[in-house]
Image 1 (cartoon, rainbow, N blue to C red):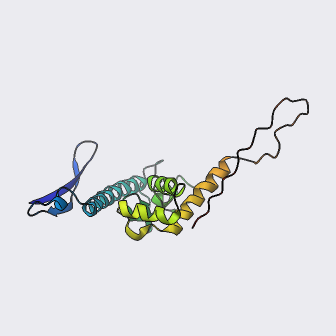
Image 2 (image 1 turned 90 degrees about the vertical axis):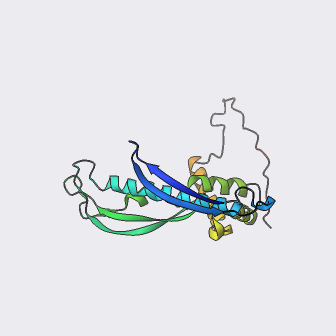
Length: 207
C-alpha cells in the first residue's frame, strides 16, 4: 500500500494557491508494529505542514507590507536575510526582506526596516515557549529538553540552554509587570490595613 498526503492552500475566495506533497508512506504486509502512523512519520508530517504553512503566511505578510499603507507606492527593496523561528513543529528559516520607508509619507525615507523581523520579535513561537515553561516548572531543564525532543519534530534543536533562557525571559517579563516592589503595606498609622501573611518560600535544587 502506498499513501501520499497533499497540502492544499486556498485563498479566502476559494482559489488554490499551493499544492504540495508533504509525505509519502508505504506499507507491505500488515504487522502490529506498522499498523497506522509511526511517531517518526507523524513528526515528518507535522514538520512539513508547518514549514509550508508558515512560509506561505510569512510570504503573504511581507507582500502586503511592500506597498505603503498611506499612498500605495511600492517600497524599494534593500536586500533580504533569513530569520530563524523555533516552533512547536520544528525550527524554520524564513526569508525576511528589508524595505525602504516611503519618502512621501515618512521622514525616514533612507532608513530600511524588516517587516517580518519587527512582527516576530520573539524567535520562539508562543506554544513552544508555553510547553518549555510548563514542563521546566515541574521537572529539570534536561528532562524537559529530552521529553519535548522525544515527542515533537524538533530533534536536537532544543537543549537545556534554550529552555533555561526562555524561562528566564518569561520570568523577567513577569517581574517587570509586577511594578515597583513595596516594602511596607501600612502607610497611615491610623489605618487598619493588615500586613498580609507571607507564604513560605520553596527552594528547588537542580541536579
